[in-house]
Image 1 (cartoon, one colour):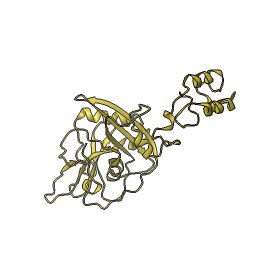
Image 2 (cartoon, helix red, strand yellow):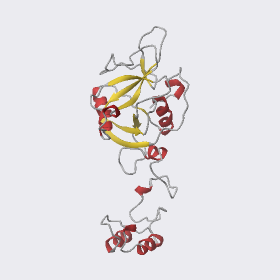
Image 3 (cartoon, helix red, strand yellow):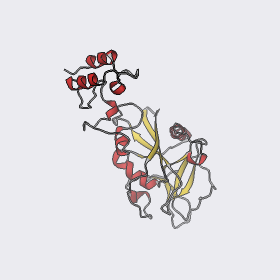
Image 4 (tube, one colour):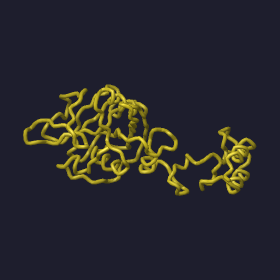
Length: 252
């Protein structure tokens, strides 16, 4: 997957790679096209974001603003959005990886954030910002599965969502279609033992999150007996069944 720098996405706009707003929702959807596994991750932020800032954030992680090529790809991207569907219609749209930069000929020239021409449908022309004289970004509607244009040149945005594409092969320990590297980058999880794995992916019984299950974990379980603090089987209480699970997973 080729990606460009922020300056390459919108060369005429001075942007900064400022921290993105806090994440309020995230979902992942995996699908196969032409024999290749693809992943779309939809992110909702607490306030508006600009596409070039999202691209600058995900590019070092191996991601890219999603570039749906046809109606089928639009559907897959929209489905990832619907997984965090909002009752507020204006929140059901997200940036995708298509932009327009003003050119001397005064025409609309859409291109992907990877620098390729973008001329796919469906595109709802004639919507409010459809002006060749201003930098534009493409926004995908979750329900209509169509994208429309929105201005990105004034430094602010009402769009709070983005759809990110990630290649296959990235670590995803809980198999939720959201790469672990993105979860860490958005500060949605911790890595208390520094092993590079999401703490909630720790083996059953690893109560101190040191990567192994041994006497230290047994001590924690016994100290939590008849409390919910070391509940391994999800029944709400620490007891004999939890002890059995811990002993079954004992590290050699």
